[in-house]
Each structure stands twice: as structure tokens, then as C-alpha cells.
Length: 236
Ligand SMILES: C[S@@+](CC[C@H](N)C(=O)[O-])C[C@H]1O[C@@H](n2cnc3c(N)ncnc32)[C@H](O)[C@@H]1O
Image (cartoon, rainbow, N blue to C red; front, side, top):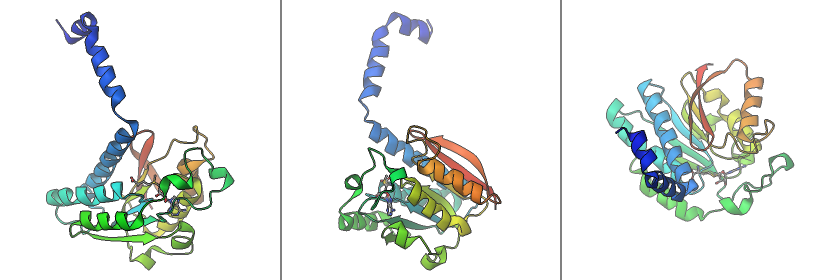
């Protein structure tokens, strides 16, 4: 009897699997898939010898930032020391002033304000000798009118855009423009939100960035999570 026939005769199996999967919290799946997305990006870039920094825009509790440092340790064992520096940017106070066009019922300031001291202490604990820096402040002051060299960033290896709204994503993309290199992977963690509206969110910021910088070419690398997407710079 093949598996399909077996399932047809024992519907309890399908009920059991459906019950099991429906109980996994979506937030947990989202976070695990974010880890897998980062792992893929770190692996691909190490494999292709795309050296440089891991940059994260939207650190929050440090979950993805700490994971990136952790997974890089394992990847370094495969490919040799990539000498990656990890740089995270966040206000640790949430979004600040949200523009009218960025308003979304789930993105409000209270959700993302955290105990910064606790987060920084945990990042230090998780870094285990890896080089990192955390730049605290609203992007309007830490990125606007700043250059990557102000933070000693020479080249971008992997960029995690996880700041949800269009405005901070635009600031992040404009900031990283000069450190993009062939092979840099950019992950957009919230690519699909805003009901698919093409004028909103990370998607709109990326489309605008591509229109303003036609000399930089991107190829879709992979999808992950709940509508998240990764792109690789194919030429600069
Ligand atoms: C979705 S959370 C990041 C989640 C994190 N990467 C993780 O995996 O745990 C979004 C973060 O972006 C930060 N953020 C959004 N807009 C910002 C801005 N204009 N300036 C500074 N931080 C901002 C918020 O403070 C928040 O911590």
C-alpha cells in the first residue's frame, strides 16, 4: 500500500499533522525562517568570498543579530576566517515619529521599545569574541548625512533590513549604497506587508532605490519566512 492509499484510509493521520502544525506559533516559524535566511546568506557569501560586514537595520532584542554572529562562527570553520564585523543599528525605542504613509496597525512605537541595557548585555554575551558594534539612535540621526566609513564599514557582505517601514528602509539603503559590492546579499524581512501595496513598506523603498540607482543590478536570491525576500547584487 502506498502512502497516499494509507492516508486515504486513515484520515486520523491528516488530522494529527494538521493539529500539530496549526499549534506552532507563527511568530516562532517567522523567527526560525529568519535564522535560516541569514544562514543561507552568510553561507553563500562565504562560499563566494564576498568579504565585508554584516549590517543589520532593526536589532530590537538582538535575536537575528546574535544568530548572525553565532552562525558565522560555524561558517568560518568551513571556509576559514571571514573576518566579518557585525554592525547593528536601532533606536531601541521603536520607530519614533511614524509618517502618515508608513502607518500600519501592527507597527506602533510601543511594540518595539526594549530594555536596551539588557539587550546590549546579551549581545555582548553572545558575541563570543566576534567583532561587533551597535549604533544606538534613530536612523534620521545615525544614518542620514552619515557615511559607512564614519563607522569603519568598508564593504557590505550581508545586509538585514528589518525596520518594517518605508522611511527607515530608504535611509538604510541610501546609507549602504557606497559599500554594496558584487555579491552582497540584502534580506528584506518585511517585504510583503501593507496588503501588497506597491507604494508602501520595505518593498516600495527598494523599488525606489533601484529606480534612483539603475547602475546597481540585483538578482532575486531566495525567499524565506512569511513573504521575506533576499536579493544579491549582481553588478555595481
Ligand atoms: C522588527 S524589529 C527588528 C527585529 C530584529 N531584527 C529581530 O530579529 O529580533 C524592528 C526594529 O527596527 C527599529 N527601527 C525602526 N525604525 C527605526 C528608526 N527610524 N530608527 C531606529 N530604529 C528603527 C525598531 O526600534 C525595532 O527594534
